[in-house]
Image 1 (tube, rainbow over the protein chains, first blue to last red):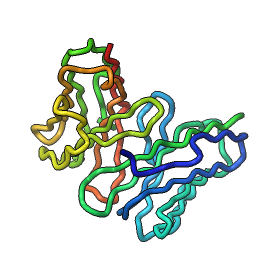
Image 2: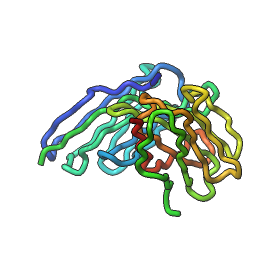
Image 3: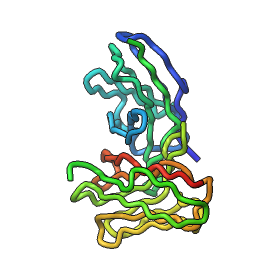
Length: 112
Length: 114
């Protein structure tokens, strides 16, 4: 079973627009991570936000974390066709174990 | 090597056949993870190693699945008597000791059981 749930499941936007993806999870966490996966390839780590952080930036990426609502969002600004991929949130449970639990992902399509 | 390497990239197995999937993690990475990813889904955790010790194998779906990392570097995921439902991409990742560390993923092995 997967802890993270992303929404929307799929998102189609025009190049230059912003893309926002949301993730919800169920239990207390140490951190939350976002990954990107291009078709047929492995996952690439984008950003990690710790449970005591509320917002983090990396280039065109902005991640927020609301531990009271057990949710996170990933914003990609000024999207490019090359951003077309699946995006996954992943959480490390705070209560023992070493699992990183992934959601089902948001499929982003950026039209040129 | 520069990244996590997995082999083979593709494997077709006949139902009932045993398979072995290999993962070469990034040198010096203590942690190694195996995941199973079905089409259109996120990766599902299978097992975790810290050096040679298998600290968590709670995600292995049945006793047909077995993983090892005998010298704390290369790892092998073995699936015995493969079934059609085992068809998936098997991903390996390595990292420094969690928590709060980035995991680096290999390209995966796509297993198709026919």
